[in-house]
Image 1 (cartoon, rainbow, N blue to C red):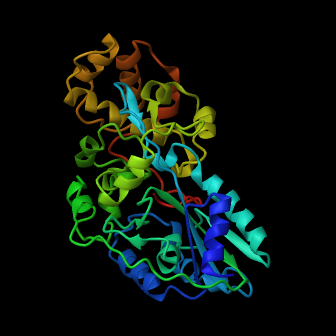
Image 2: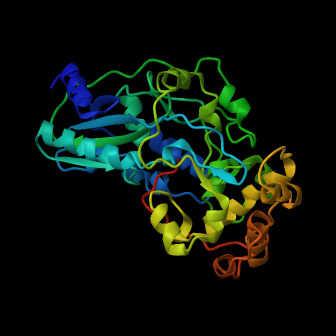
Length: 368
């Protein structure tokens, strides 16, 4: 199959970008992973970095593998800013684009014939390296894969097949002299362009089992999971943002969450609603911790309008949430709602701001 034939088939199946490369080892990527892990840049993250001897060797993922096909699906959608009492989610979590991509790659594999294996959001394969080799995009200074038409607002997936496909060349583009993402990162996680220091990344800390460092809590502002700062400022993202600026949100999309609901909801409800997210040990207390930290922003910002309970919260919430103990959870809930919550007491029991949680075994969710 020629590259043009592959492109037409991908368009028919609703894939936004596609490319192919030979199933060969990612030797340079494997070396980078080992070097950065030795420097401690991954913090306690595992994901594709845990076993580079597997994730950097696509030729071993399928008997007789000949081609690694990479695909991107754009998830960008516009939305209004969070209101008082709401927390912000990163765009890739608003709906499960990974599930959509997985289905479409499986359909592509059936159309190609032969034997194949689909890997989406999987620890066994470094999707970004496959995409860069196949010309789907290039590595940005924010470490994300940037595509020509959709910027970095994409999820990536891979199809390893024993069918030989015509390789597509690398994109041949880069960030040039632009350093907007490096300059915008409030914690300096991108001070070494092209390399992420996970120990300073806000997105990492919203997913970490350890307490969020005090110096980073104010920088999170209303973010309760993940962070899009380095994508929000990227010039490569302006095109798709203009083209999709008037499109409605996908069905079921969730750009923001109610902080009160996160504090009041039962554990099982939070697990069900956010199954698509990586949460340490699948424990909803980490989500509530993030909601409590987000409440701290209300003191730092004046509330000119809004319900009395929200104005009161902005005046009285602590500048730094010092953990997720039962007292902190109950206090935050009370200031927002005027009601006491037994759920906060149960879910937060035993938590202390100065303590640390046991490190979980990571799921197959990839780091954002």
